[in-house]
Every structure is written in structure tokens, then in C-alpha cells.
Image (cartoon, rainbow, N blue to C red; front, side, top):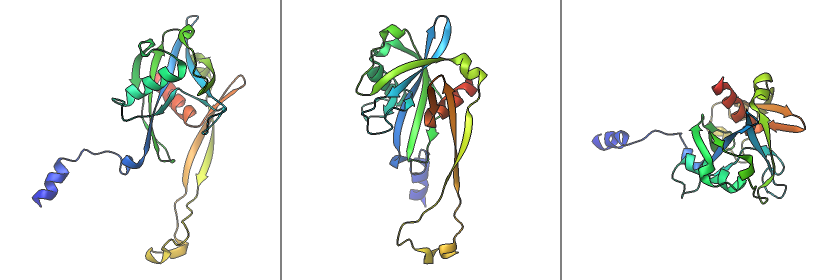
Length: 202
């Protein structure tokens, strides 16, 4: 009993199974343009294997060399926008996000001093654009539901569970948000983080 209690005393709680999740950090970059605060977005390079051409925030996978999630967000933003890290300031955490796809996203918001300092990495970024925060204060995103259905693999041991092949699996639902600005469509995890950020600053 004492060994069990000792193990429990020394345990730091986290997300069950979280050590198997891929972890990413992103930054919601804020920049002053002509006296108004804008949010900066990237369009992912078309040669990328994952989500080419989609709109996102700067960010990427947290490396073992990163001191923490915040450092990873700053490093990735620096690499993608061609900025020195001292041009990225006032970096504060938002709520982190556990996705249905086996990833944990750690978002931050921070300021960039000057658009003229940016020199995007063409291997990762096709283009950048900004949207005034006032736009997102005026419009609400459109919301659409996506259902995920359970599909057990071949050979699943139905004989070991009550109900067998007629087991009533719970359907998982996620809600996808869509923001439109001029010819740009912001959706997916980027829209979720943006919506959370806007709720926070309200």
C-alpha cells in the first residue's frame, strides 16, 4: 500500500494518453497598421505535404530543444516570418486545444513591431495578409457540424462487449467555424483559435 501511495503522491496529473499526442505551438500575431490593430495570417506554401495553400497562424511542432511551448511559438514565428525573436513581444498564452486528431495545440498571442521587418520563408509561406480586429468584432463566424462515426477495425472482439456488434457507439461531433474576409477563408483550427481570442479580448 505504501508503495502505491508514494507513486500517487509523486504523480503530476496531465491529459490521459497525452504522451502519445503530437504537440504544436502557434502565435496569433498582432500588428499596428495606420493606428489600427490587425491580426496577421499566413497562406501555407503550395509545396507543403500537409494542408498546402490553407490559411494559418505561424507555428509548428514543439521540438525537444524548445524550453517550453511559448519558446516554440516564438521560434516558429521567427523562422516562418524571417523575424529576429526580439521583434516578437508581449507573448501571452491562450487556452490550449486538444484535437480529435491526436494533437495538442498551444496557442499564444503576441505583437510584431513592424511589417517591414518581415521576410517570409518561401519554403513554408506562400504569402501573408492582415485583417483589422474591427472586422472580427463586427462579424460572427458561420458554424457547421461534422459527425465522426466509430468504425471498429476488422477482427474487433465484439463478443467481449455487451451488445456485441449492436453496441451503441456514441457519435462524436465537432463544429467547424468559417470566417470570410475579401477573397480569404479562415477555417479549421485557425478559426477556432481566432474565435477564442476574440471572445477573450471582449
